[in-house]
Length: 404
Image (tube, rainbow, N blue to C red; front, side, top):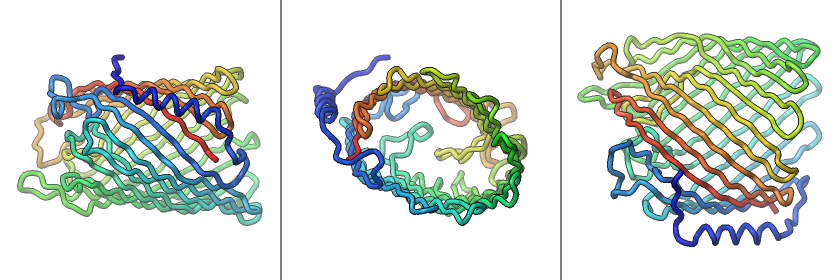
């Protein structure tokens, strides 16, 4: 991996890390309120995900950035009620593509409620402002993505071996650039679930879910304006199985029906779901793995969703009580449904794949102080028909964060 550093700035960050490591935090790990501060540096040799054999914007592919963030974290339990609040503000400055500089926001508020021994749930809201990924968006302009979420759910344990759950969530996404506003959308998700609870604490249940998506701006395709609104119904089985004391399986598998008239015949159906496995044999190493098949939104001017098949593996090594190393790898094949207006010939290559690999080491010299270094690789094999070219990207990040 070839990574270039920008001047002496990494040395400045390392100096700040050394100073932070010798500082004494005034708050203890169990305190309810903490102030948060963080400093980060990153470098990516293909920041804007320019396809292979294409010139970079400004004949430049690589860029470095600095990030600073601060905020507060509050988490306290009052009898049976728990309140959790997170509010963080951040600032990102890029060395070359200065037009990408932005202020990030991350706000989360949750109330974990409980009434007696049989009723509990969660109510909350989130707001996030960050730079949208350039994986499927060819531009060197800043494109902030603002997402808002509100949710409420409740579980009723009406029998020692049975419980029922109901939930609702509304997600809203908005993009800064006028050319990307066609990806603005809202999604309302309603869920009903019935679970059987075994004596081992393993559960098996049935989940019925409906997702209604609405796009406020019709998407122009030639002289045609397409409405990407959709309705997706799902019926899935949820299994949480404690196989042994060191291994478990968490699965949500079933069937879905998606109605989105702007694509082909407008109706899609098929199996979908995710299976997560975890294995903690004891000692210093633990492992995770997952496989999935599901629909996912795509931040692209050409296609707004894909049917994805993915797999991922991960491992954590606790080198010492204060040093942890994480390694992760994931691969995902994305299958596109062509719009009627594209008139794509049958048999065309309407798929691509994305691979991600990363290694991250975290040192915690004090309970509320974290120093992290990581390297990552991302690659995509593109689809000529859809217009997604193949690319490779390598990055490195350094960060220091502390709570007070």
